[in-house]
Image 1 (cartoon, rainbow, N blue to C red):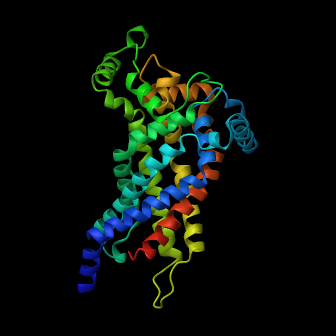
Image 2: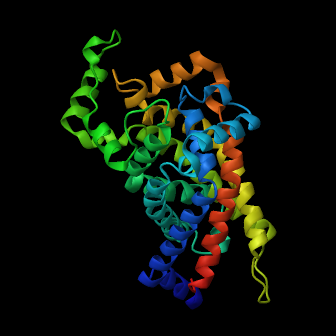
Length: 328
C-alpha cells in the first residue's frame, strides 16, 4: 500500500510532470522531423491542391510529387511549414504525453486496474487536451504546407502572411444559395471574433483525435502489457521493442482516424479553396463524396502509413528513452 502511495506522489510531483513533458516534447520534434517531407506531400493530396492531384493515390505518385517539389524549391520546399510544425509539436507532444501520464494514473493507478477501455479513454483525453491548446499553430502549418510555387507566384510564404490571411478572411454568405440561420450565425461570430478563424476544422480535429490518440495509446498499452510483462529481474524494454510496438500502434491509429483527418484538412484550408463561405461538416463531406466517393476519405492513406508508422515508432521510443534518461 505504501509503495502505491509513493508511486502516486512521485507521478504527481512537479519534478515528474516537467520531465515527462520535456521527454514528450523532444520525442515529438524528432519524430516530426523524420517524416516532414512526407507530411507536406500528404497535406497537398488531402487538401486537393490542384498542382498535385494528378499524383495522388499511389506510392510512385508520392515520390514524383516530392521530386517536383524538390526541383521547384529545393530541400527547403520539402520542409515548408516545418518551423511552424516544430513550434506546435513541442508543446503539443509535451502536453499530450504529460497529460497521458497523469490521466493514465488517475484512471489506472495500478496494473490490476488497467483495461482496454481505460487505456483508450486516457489516450483520447490526453490527445484532446493537447489539441485544444495548440490548434491555431496546426492551422498555420497546414496553410504554409498547402501553398506551392505555381499556385502562388507573387507572394512569399511566411507565418506572418498566413496569420494576416486567416485574420482578414471574410465569407460572403449573402451570395450563396444555401444561406440559412446557421450560416448567418457563422458569419456573425467569425467576423465578430476573428480568433475563431484560427480554429477552422477544430471540431473535426477533436472528433478525429478520439479514435487516433485513443487507439494509439490503447494499442501501445495493450501490446506492452501483452508482450512486455513485468519481470522480476532488472531487464527493461529495449528500443527495438518500443519501436516495433510504436509502429503497430501508429498503423492502427491511422486506419481508425484517417477519414476525420481528410475532412479537417479540407476545412483548415477552406479560406483558400472556398473563400465565399465557411466550410462545415456536411458540406465538406458531400464535396469529398461527390468528387471521389468513399475513396476520397482515404486519399493519401498509403502516405499516411509511410509517415505515421515511423513517426509514432520514433515518438514513443524517444519518449520512453527520454523518461528513462531523465529518471522518470
